[in-house]
Image 1 (cartoon, rainbow, N blue to C red):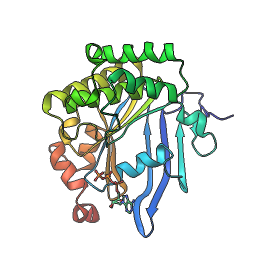
Image 2 (image 1 turned 45 degrees about the horizontal axis):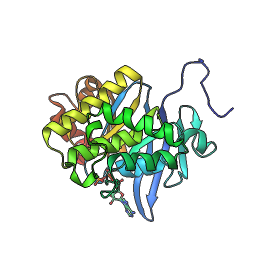
Image 3 (image 1 turned 60 degrees about the vertical axis):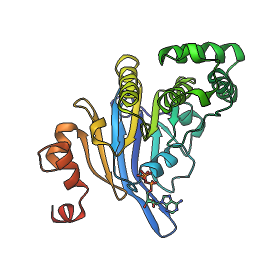
Image 4 (image 1 turned 180 degrees about the horizontal axis):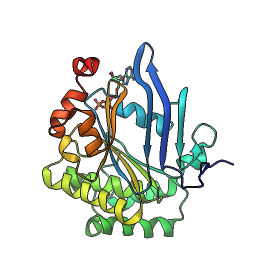
Length: 257
Ligand SMILES: Nc1ncnc2c1ncn2[C@@H]1O[C@H](COP(=O)(O)OP(=O)(O)OP(=O)(O)O)[C@@H](O)[C@H]1O
């Protein structure tokens, strides 16, 4: 059996990472990281620059092979069943990857074809996703004519073409204005709530956490706290999230804890 449903028979986590470590030569980027994202959950992976967020994403997308630890996507172990695991995954990378000279429709059609969708199905899904992000009327425009926020929305539409059940978003709001950030966050949270999408949203921005978010605080490649907002506040010694986060990511405080 490729997918494990656990002894209880309950649905498996969308993402389950256990004991994951990774080093770039002598530089340890992740140390024994374990975390879970359940279906329908919006989970914020909160960490400062260099915490290891992009490294974690590179391992989950199999850009790098995980030598220590395991990664399961809806129960499918990534190393043993990569096709089954990755078929459920969508990704929005930190660096923009749309072709600015192609139209929105062409960018999406290209991606749909690469994923083996028929031309008609690719077109149907592209229109559906563009409508959901309010950009169907711009489908024929070259991407270079769009604002940064609109381009991010198109990347998200492209990631959803294959109907993933788990979406990874790596610092998707960097460089966006407040209105664009809020649109993107609202859209993603709605997909979690209404369609059961599981999202792991990497950021260093505390104000992207709301009271319903699940949180994983990563610092220097280690999980410092995880759970609901209350759990993380408690683990961080109380006060505001900003105060708790500052303590959780402060070596001296953690060392004395
Ligand atoms: N190719 C690499 N070679 C050597 N060290 C690397 C490499 N990529 C990342 N690192 C180091 O690994 C650690 C984790 O980096 P990573 O990019 O995963 O963090 P991040 O949380 O995504 O940071 P950022 O928000 O700056 O992208 C950092 O100390 C970084 O300098």
